[in-house]
Length: 329
Image (cartoon, rainbow, N blue to C red; front, side):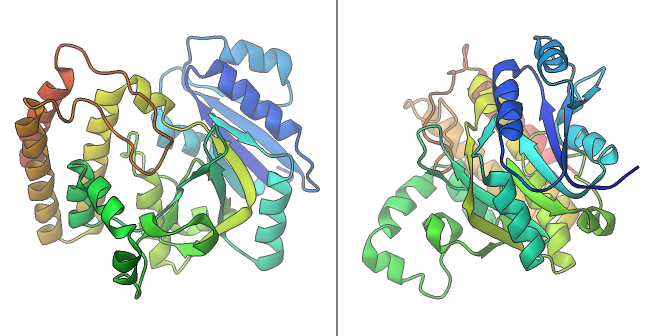
């Protein structure tokens, strides 16, 4: 295979309109680097495949006979990629005309191995795409929505001063982000050598935390995630979680369990199980008072009204997950 500069890998599943718009934004780009677009379709039942064939014949289309999920889909794309750099790109994104040029020029000229752009909501406000590695206390605060209260509290100038030694990721403004523990894989540029050293995405990760798990491996090899504020990508975000909140929440929990079991000590893993169990019991207790009846993506996507699960599906899922967390080995 003749190498090229960049392989853009997109995984799609029943996202016809946004996928076509995403691909169109790629080909409308002004970029001085050679690139290919690889679309892995996870057995969509809409018209995504046919329309891509008709409207973008230059796209390398890989049709899976089953829904592989995100990680397996990306890995399949990587196996077929020829680029010196790999851009993992969500189907629900739109690139600015100069995004590819800025990302590639920055990566090549400054020898960065991992580079992420500024992500924007559909209303062009900043979407947080930078994160610290997880801790049990932060997970508890998030799962109980106490992080919302904490954020409002520490937004006070006095409490912000208390974090003078290291600002938590959620307190950072976009123009103060440089190197982070990891960046969102909604759009991430990787040098091929990273895949060769640390491997591809963990296919045990179903829907969440693939980016964090990959970052934990790259950190061991001393790679750094670099935030490139000049490159901008609109990320609609949360489209799957909005339509499937119960699956989304369960995948979040399962991803955390797998992540901790793989990368942390047994005692830390046990602490995580206790933390998640307590948080779930907290949700069950407050359900009767009308709380926790929707999944809230605080401080990531602009607020989207998730479909409220019917027949108390989410409550049943909380109780079911308590049992699954306890028995997880």
